[in-house]
Length: 385
Ligand SMILES: [Zn+2]
Image (cartoon, rainbow, N blue to C red; front, side, top):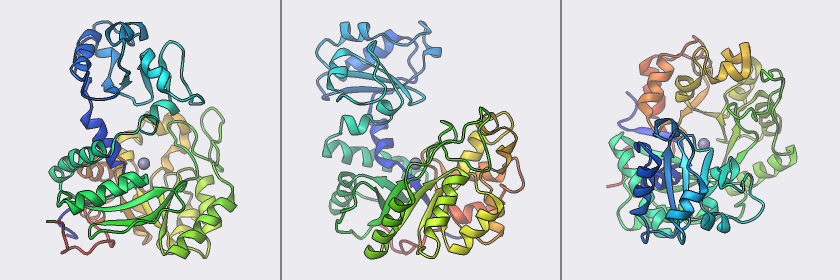
């Protein structure tokens, strides 16, 4: 066996920890009970964000109303985020704090998509909250025997990791990738906190039908979209080579994958394609030949690839070519495994790929375990105390 701990190569560790630190509404049986849980937080935080309610489990069988939150919390901003993570309800105090321009904020207090997905940017946690969130997430990591994570960050999160290392509280290794908007990012590295490079999104997701497709189509005829021009990605490649860092390139659909292969040709030096979900046969060959590292999520197979699942619903019969991890492995591709926190669980990922519905996806347990415990970024015998 390769290693003695798991390496999760794609995490959103701080958001995960922040989520765990907030009131958990997933087990509440009514809106009343959820509100009384949130009331306990008054005075403890500037804004109260309750997570994971599900109206189908509530007596009332409906969303909470802005008016009832206003009645119970006239002076404190409160947001209740639904279990799916794409919908939330805010009271008037919270609505007043959301800067104009965010999509989609409805007058009745219902928040949708962008604004909900970016709550941590709109209401930034304090540095202390960030550190607490990391330690909370770390408890889960240690419980799962995850000893190294590759995390997608903003600079403040990176600094929090560094400080925790200095305080002797960091027990896992962290390879940090900052979003590409932070081009000037230059921070010292610790012994167990390293700066990997930049993360860029070339397309969206299959769930939202925004992953960019070329040979394939969504069942409604849509093709998704690319988010950047070739030149922007080219520039980022130059920056990475100048600074001796690598790119983490989010590309899910075959059109986004084509863009990475086109722009990256002859420029690759340890760069990674994140997700690589809908690669065509010849694209797999070219990615391997170019030397890209393919950072994939075996749990996506378990979540969405079985008959009648999300991939089939959104892609129709083309869905069978998703996440062909087995094929890539047998062709000699360099693969990293990450959970993307959906859920944060290497054992679930391994189980998903071992029991994958299609032979081109499948790996043996031994192969999957080997990938999930491999990393070349830190030496194995060198571990945080
Ligand atoms: Zn992600």
